[in-house]
Length: 464
Image (cartoon, rainbow, N blue to C red; front, side):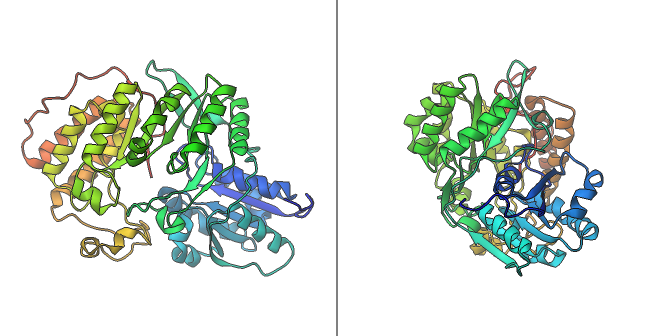
């Protein structure tokens, strides 16, 4: 860093996460390293695991309160927490950072957030702390950074233990402690519905390999047996990714991992998949989104249904597990289209591969979304809703919206009761038939119900 470690002595920062998909938050640990290296007293609070009531003293003495907002759910939770944070400590500088902070900057400012940082946030948070500590008037407002940073090993001291977070469930029922890290940020692609695009505009940034390995190393020492790579697309930088997992496997041959990779990249770099398999990749998540070529074109996904079918067969031939994700409900989905969607999943033998919540995901249109450029979307959206932090829309067929709501309730209830995926899929099929008014129509390809999952999966059921 080139600065003395005492620069921020007597400066107190509270970095707060509200929800991070069941992971120990990398978005707290990474900036904490920068602040702590420069002498700041930093406390990390994960409100998905720690009650704010028990840590009010931390908030009261903070000079800087910074909330990490990597996703939509986290942001909605944060909007409820912010008034209490301001009440506890009105003198502290309040900051929001992460992917969804800039997308909701107007609403966050109205709640009292002074500085909003998007993109690469570590250096900007440090500069903000230095300004506050030096009694300088900090540059408030919105900042989006695409800086190329030399990262530090994330500082995870003081966070809840890994055993409190999501676990990897193996087909035999065993559970492994799961860690989380990031090898890159941003994305080269411009998918219309993706919240990354308005912030990174087709750019991506690499986290140096030695930093990633060091972060994994400290999580393995803390008990991690599996690592989730949270990169938006692990193959944005395929050479970086492959060299990383090879080095990881040499050091920890029993460690497994999962990563997210676009259909387009799985086909483009298919020769690299055996390396993933042989270095411990438990499964690959791929944002398929739709099985309708017209919808895929609207979303600018740059793959087709046929491409997805190729990937499914390719994974089957390699003996690898694919976990596709979908935006099952959107303005262009009909009841007949949803029936086709379920039928294809069943015919492909992918019921066990699809997280149940994926059967009920509804298209979210946040502020700044590229979807707003489409005339088809402009015709159906309502004014921006500050509660849902999105542009509401209604389907032209009320039965479709009613089905989505009932599916979401049923799936959430079923997951809490630990129902297997085949059973939940069958519920989805029957709810669809009820919506169509044909309750006795059977899905011919529905397999016999499995006693347990047949591919590895993480225990956190939610998605966005």
